[in-house]
Length: 304
Length: 292
Image 1 (tube, one colour):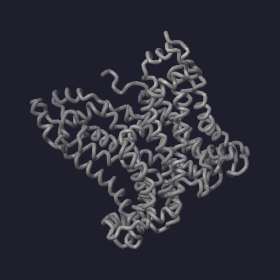
Image 2: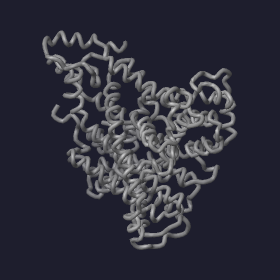
Image 3: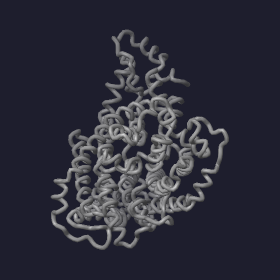
Image 4: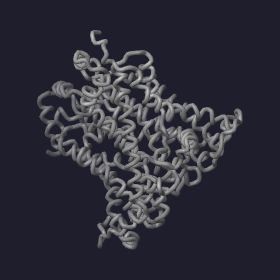
């Protein structure tokens, strides 16, 4: 299929230069619309494609160049003799350690968020007590409070808890600020479970915990995936908490590591490009194989 | 209700999440108000200083400059990003194969971390070694060093960073619009242009609001991209208010005064999202397609 298809009634097409024109024969217009390519949309999308792709291509391409090559040749031309030296220097620069730290932070954050969210959402969905619902409202306020503006008190708090310069210092606030969206998504999904299924559990003599294990957990799997993806992306790509709450190279995560590469490598642009490319690879693989989960997880709680 | 039985979970199921959120998210919000009335150099304990920080805030020209700049980025960001995200999102909602393939590329920037994006663009725009220096026309500009250009440079990088996310919002909302409406409109003789303005846009109004709120709140609080890309420079040309807060705290070690700025930003962010949702009568829980 090609752009020709873009005029079908099912397509939600953006504004085009096509004048609305006087309405004459409805069936004729319909046929015309199907046959006429939506040129404006086509041209605009190609422009945007270039704007997105050129920097990314430049990054990947540049990461395989020698430094000399990078400085003398056109950076968009494929390297005459590709090299992996940049990737090697990234790894000798401590990348492996940062990578492992990133995994620890991401897994830790996701584990906390999922473990706290599932029972909490269960309570909110099935317990109408005012106290529970008020607790839910309090957490929803968190939706409107961005983490970056609270960076100073979080820093004070982590200091007072003697957690400064540990991975836990990154995990705890990252998890806390991922909770509101996660709880919202999870609660909505548990509310969709038919009342009859809950009642059947009661008739079977199951208590709340049994219901949580045998009914809620299995049925909440898609929501858990969404929450996990959303939280993992935030934790993996988080920058400010790691920057402010850790200091030593041992505890450094990837994103902060990238900025230290920038000063380490100085004018070694290909080295930096290799590091940035590497940092993106894990998420890129997830994207290749689970694009739908990843994209819907990203807008969790906002897209509907 | 018949099932008022033992299955109902007690409030304790919510307690761990609530406690955790209370300690690591609510407590900081309370603390920041307290800190705004103290002097604290980041070591030891904060010492109370009365309203000193607040009177300093009122007369600090840098606060005014940075807040003005924040407003510039807010307006610039909204005006540039909303139409692009809306158009691409609606376009990407089509089920055609070429659109699916292209939009999977369009969404690539959401995979990159802030740090990766800022560093990538830093090297693309570097006045000595950057990609733009190798290209005709573009090589005449110093995108990061020229104070009169750098605001637009930063706005562009933020656009590149955030448009895909908002595109996703619009795409999934546009996919929720029933095909039958478009079919009926086509039979009535409405062309693309009219279908977009009479059907798509009105039905996406709540998504426009959601996306707008996220952009507005984001622009008064998010600063990590600018921190890496320009660090507020050259001079203070791109030092938006949240970045000023960060620098006063973590570079100037005046955490008390920085907290004062933080309080202003938190109030601004919450106020903006409240104002937009109130003014537009938006309720998060109501369906977008009420009455269909």
